[in-house]
Image (cartoon, rainbow, N blue to C red; front, top):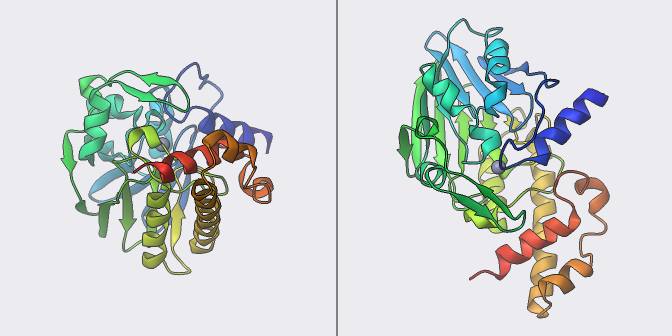
Length: 297
Ligand SMILES: [Zn+2]
């Protein structure tokens, strides 16, 4: 139990990059999710896997130092090296393995804005953090604007972009036969989400992404969040309902012409914090993201 919480903490402490993390103690584990689909956990974003006769398709690849552990975990489900890596967005805890896996033969695929942001320095205002451009070998080789579909391992893997949500380059991945949906960081299961307003993210968009998946999911659908444990439709519904409350309360403060500082000080989420505010995004940060997102025009 202690180890699990440490892994989760590490995974959530550095949502943008790999700065000063020690990966030696991290274990990467594969969990079977559905027919032909697995989830890998280690540090950073949850990895989705389709494996079968046509090869290995990965959703995200965590941090570069973890690549050997990720490869070892994959070896337990397939003898083949990854053929495709789909990045759900540009953050370093989801794309850090691109260079290693690309050199090992994988084709990296992402929405247009992922390659655009990885190509140049990024600056996050809330965390006052710069992320340097990625090396050319880490950049997606194939990009798409709205959707791309993979026909692999007997499944139809439909990848679709959503309007700006966690960032402006989010892609969600629907494994139709397996009835699994990977939501990237549009879903932090059990926690307030990181809304990367500096990367074009929007609270309304995060709610929209949840609504989109709720419309696709049935009670048997397995939902892989960017962070947090494997989820289902009911967990996503609770997250979506929480976000609507956050939006409505912060919108009211903006309508009352409260400043950001006054809105944070008003503690509008106090009754929600015990449930949702224990992760990397605490109550004050959630109010800040909501305020910035909703007051931007
Ligand atoms: Zn992210």
